Length: 490
Image 1 (tube, rainbow, N blue to C red):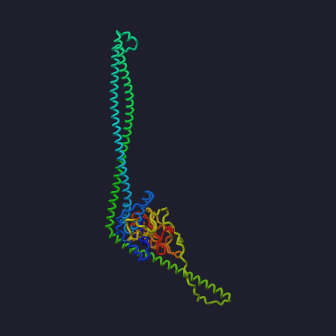
Image 2 (image 1 turned 180 degrees about the vertical axis):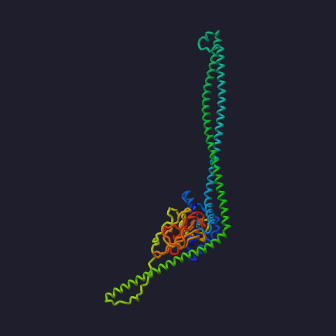
């Protein structure tokens, strides 16, 4: 996460941590959840994968879960906060990694089956080639023998003076018997030669067909070999991917077990730290509540005195006017009793005119409000979550921070319980509402205690000081002693 979250253990708030502390009883009830936070067996459980429409949404949801867990512990201990957030990420990623491993193994099986299938087809094609090659050799031998036979017949015929193609055969015969024998021999020789020629013609056709088949089989073998080479590459790639995914799964399991063991071992430290933070948060919250109570009482008293002054002035003016009308006999104005003062209902807090604390567009990484505890992590003593009472902005270190409204700096310096370099500004009372803003985790502060600041004045430079796991800005608004969502005022 580029921007880290701050604030929000349990359901309490503090001016320095951004929690609302409505009272000691509520504080004990809500913060008791955090005291026993990591004692739950659920810490060992597996965080289910985020329910989202696609992998991008799932990854974002999982990251937000980790961010929320980290925000809930950051002011207590940044190292523990990071470990808890990492555990959520590792456990949340594990089901997806295991599914990816299963898919990778399936691809290995499919690739292996393809390689085996192609190998079998190549073997069969090679057998066919061997048979055709053997057949061609046999047929060639037969053709050679047939040609030799035809040659022998032709030679014998030549030696015998040629076949009787006309009457010279008959005229040359010495007797009827010689004539019959010559005709018979000639016919036999002719039949043998014709048969041999027919056999040779058929053999030639057979040889041509075998050659064509051989060319086709050789082309098939070449194609199969190319496919087999590609399949082998795919198989190796699938095996490599499966091995990588297996290593990822193994590492997630190992890292989760290691972090879980670490957090289990740190339970006493976490418990002690939470108790310490509880007391400091209660003190700071009470301090803010007291400041705003006095401001509101002083504003109410001033408004009452002004209303009574105006009423007395109006009564005196009325009495003087009446005396003048009666010839100057007035008097009794000092006995005037103003009517009971009824304070007006508080106005809209937007009257403070708060502006964004940054001059640039900085995204909100963690908003204000209830945070449901992800399954298998911190259960806050059975409450199921906590209230994040500020806003975390993803401001990079070195970003200028400006006063949201005019006011008086009531704290500028190092926050003693995790907020780092912080600033708190009281904006006084407007229309019956008291407002205070707080800015934490700065690299440094540019104002001092008691200083009057104007709206938009530079007050700090953002950073990641205090119990923070990275650069970001934590911003809070306190209205009449209670932390409220800054987005309702900005």
